[in-house]
Image (cartoon, rainbow, N blue to C red; front, side):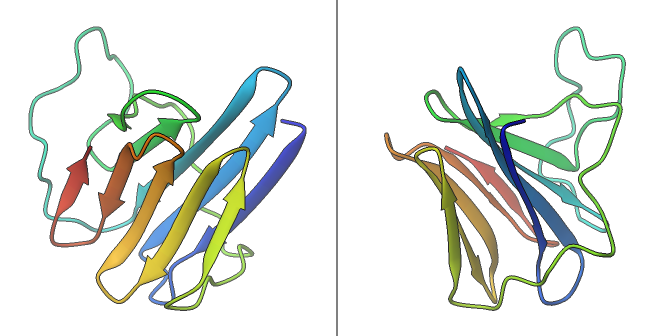
Length: 118
């Protein structure tokens, strides 16, 4: 990635990264603990899924099928009410979780209790 910024929620349960490269940008969040809102494995996914969410600069938010993690204890905390933006994608931290949205208004909202794609 050309630009990469990792961060975590104040509780440390949600870790995210927002990154860009020559052809676009993406935001991804991984949850340590959750009550899964999605229980059906994505088609063709042989890796980890269910606690990983991603949105690109265009298109809708998706369940990520991953073999890695963006969790890093050194990630800085994104305080409630603050946001980070890169490549047309913004992620906002709130007591209700973290929401990442692209310019078209698509993305995801994740919290321990509930996760949503839009």
